[in-house]
Image 1 (cartoon, one colour):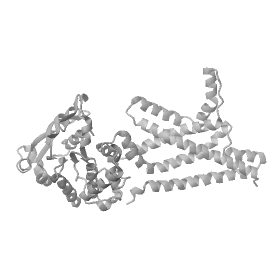
Image 2 (cartoon, rainbow over the protein chains, first blue to last red):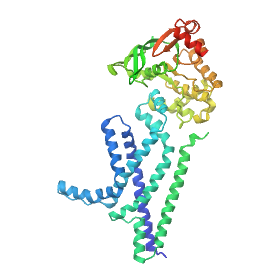
Image 3 (cartoon, helix red, strand yellow):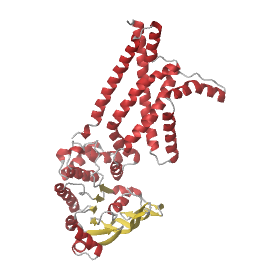
Image 4 (cartoon, helix red, strand yellow):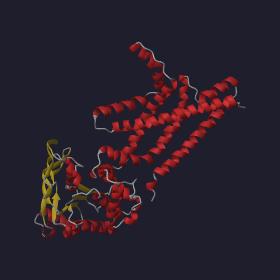
Length: 221
Length: 248
């Protein structure tokens, strides 16, 4: 069946998976909000930068972004400056997943902000609020409910995409069970992995459903 | 004191000229009702005063002070735009903040813009709710209110910022007929307190009873203005006569 060392390894793999997904979602949402505001900005430089950012990070594979940060960046640095740098695999994973998540979040957040009735901004301005006050106090809070479904989606995708970190010398859940399956010739380890993925995604699905109801409480008649 | 003075205001959206030179001066305590057919520029004029639309040309003065002077869609002279904070606005579609309770709808702007003390502004908001007759709705979300109640909250929300001038943009046009009266009564009460008001409205009898002055707009210009006895009961201009005949 499964011994204690294996159980420990599977647990560690699951923790790594969760860590990467959550760090990516956390920084991805913060940076994604800024990119979303940039996409709607009247400043041409900010607007083009944001557009370019989304274009690049959505348009190339996450795996490629991971490789650029972990493998290519040290080489580029040596060629440019002569001094080498060894990338920490965990940090590289956090960075690549956060940057990638930011691009997707930016589009989700922009769509949510643009779906808020224009009259809300006008009312806020007529009451003397500036753009920042209107955004943070009036517009963005109204997007929370609409954001929950797509953000939950994003988190679940992230949980599953973390399996890509196996390419940069990290042991996530999937790589851990793959190693065990290869070593023992027993396929049951894949079932364990599937169960854990489903367990995690089930929890997040339920949590995000609950959050959606909670953030939308003012819409109940 | 002249509270609002518009000098040769023009506003174009692309090639479409919506306001074609508006001159208007409103005295303190005056209630001015603006009537006219759809698309005549009534709402645009109101929105220009409040900078929700930027004028293409002309001057806006508030409380005898220049706020903005523009020509060819560019600023010619920078005025004191802070005076716009003395304007309160009520919209046709209420535009209450749906994620905030009635009380928070009223207090958020004073808290955020003026850093008002929470206890003091809550007390003030309750007084305003008393005035519009909705004290018992303080902790409800807007969606649970009827249209008429929502609009009364919107009026209270605007008043919480201590405006010197209130602008009403068709405040009863989105309401069911049986709810129009309660909103008009609230506006009437404000007029009796001496508030300076510009009201864009389709309620002709309301304008006749309440207004000190009625302005009839058509095709981007002020066509006729004067006391309601003249403009509504004995209009001189043919366009005014036609409009009033059509809606009666």
